[in-house]
Length: 187
Ligand code: ADP
Picture 1 (cartoon, rainbow, N blue to C red):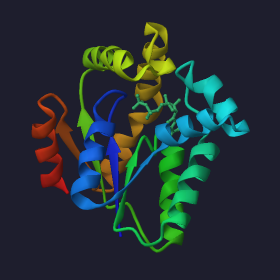
Picture 2 (cartoon, rainbow, N blue to C red):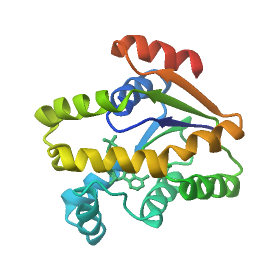
Picture 3 (cartoon, helix red, strand yellow):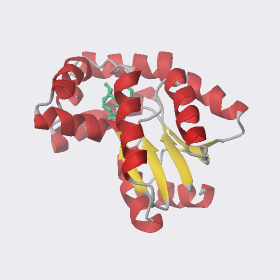
């Protein structure tokens, strides 16, 4: 079974590319952001706790997202592969993902990183705010927090996966089709 990780700063286009990749390769798309937003919508205790943090631009605790991902692995034993989007986001999450997959006799196939500069992150998120209306996309302060969180907590994953020989970076500037083509080549 394949386990690809879509990596990149907020607004890099992971969700957009994931939708196209799912159509082409029949992978199951697991977006921790989408899973959390669905908990918020349902009004669960988990959703309420997560919303407080998400709306400030902070990460939710590792155990919460790890539990959600493990659930999905267990519920979907027969899929061709998984496309992880927004997970892992910390080195601890990456280590725990390795453990989870090891238990299942699997491992991370590769990490596809879509890279854009910070200036473009802000531009893309402002644009998305007008379309999707996500609370965490609306204020410059929250967006700035998410960029800081990305650099401090998530960027260290680059060297984690480079060391494992699993990291491939592509330039996230270009048309949706161009970037999709580059990702397909990597896959
Ligand atoms: P974006 O692609 O803009 O970063 P996401 O939908 O991936 O947005 O995530 C939205 C928010 O959900 C994050 O800012 C964070 O608060 C929370 N979140 C998502 N994935 C994780 C994760 N793996 N660990 C901790 N928090 C997460």
